[in-house]
Structures are given as structure tokens and as C-alpha cells.
Amino acid sequence: METKKMQIKKPRYQTIAEDIAAKIVEKKYIVGEKIYARSSLASQYGVSAETARRAIAVLQDLEIVEATKGSGVVIISYENAVKLIQRLEGVQTVRELQVALQQSIENQISDLMALQETAKELVNRTERFRSINPFVPFQLEITASCPYLSRNLSEINFWHNTHATIVAIRKDHHLILSPGPYATLDDGNVIYFIGDDEAIVKVQNFLQI
Image 1 (cartoon, rainbow, N blue to C red):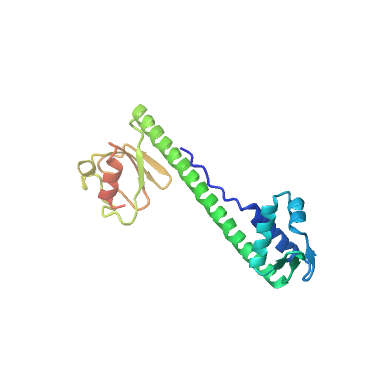
Image 2: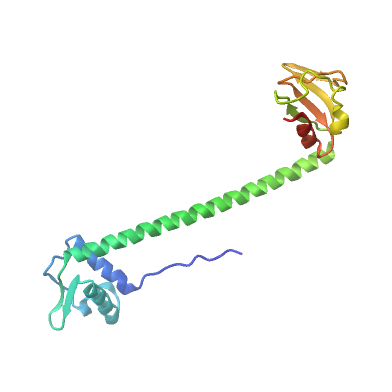
């Protein structure tokens, strides 16, 4: 089930206060200037008188403006307006990083789910293919770590130890089919063999590759 994301919405009065502070920082309003009365402010932003009053109260609490009866609202501090805007920009940056991080996590989850589905389909198709043709051989390259280099298959009891049957050996650019019990294993050879589902692990363990 899809989870709905919680949206954070600022109060309108806070948005108005921030807008006025931004205009002070941009020097559209200057210290000592008288700005709108509450009623004019309410009309300008299309809000109630109470919302306008709260916006001015926020700025007054931060000592950016001073509001007195009969004198209206006067700007008293450019520096405090700058501090508010800087703090808001910092908060916005953090929010943007949080959103980017959340989006990255969601993308990774989506990618992992797609990878999981692809892997599942690969396994299903491989099993179907093997059920149709059980004689598709496994293949392994012989490495220098193999303890049976230069020894033939009969000497090392390959089939008895692995229950797998080698159907071909590639030596350099030559492919030897049905190599028989006297074929030897050398570094760099590639062996092709058939067996049950555990054959690949048994052969790897036996040849130590």
C-alpha cells in the first residue's frame, strides 16, 4: 500500500513576515521607514486583519519592526532582518537536502525492487530452460590452485568425487569432445560438464577453483 507523504505548510502570517523581512534585506524598505498599517497589510496580502497582526507580531518579537498605536509599523533593524533570512535559507537548504535524500532512497528502493524482479525472472527462465534441456553443460576454468594439474581424470576419480561427467575440455583454441578417462587437466583449460543442480559446487570444491 502506497504511503502518502506528509506535507508541511507554513502559517500564512509567517510567510508574510518572511516576505517583509526579505524586502528589508533587499532594501525595498529602509530603517526608519513606516510601512503599511495592519489594515493596509491585510488588504495587500489578501488576508484577515488578525493574520496581518500576527505577521507584524513576529517581526516585532524579532526586533525587526516596531508597532505602536497611532504610529503604524516602523522598520527598526536591517541586521535582524538579515539574520532571519539567513536562518530561513539555512532551514531551506536542510529541507532541500532532506528531500533529495528521501528521493535518492526511494529511487534506490525502486531500483532494488526492479533488480529483484529481474533476478527472479532470470532464475525462473533458467529453471524452465534446464527442465526443457537438462543436458546444458556447466563450465569452469582450471586455475593454478587446482591440486590435480597434469593428472588424468581416471587417476583423480573425477566422477566418483563429483558425480559430474566431463563432456568436453577446451585447451587453448582446441575443443576436445568426450575426452575420456585419460584426459588431463592443465592450468587455463576450460571443462564442460553435466550433472545435477549441485554439480557446479561439487566440482568447484573438488578442484579447489
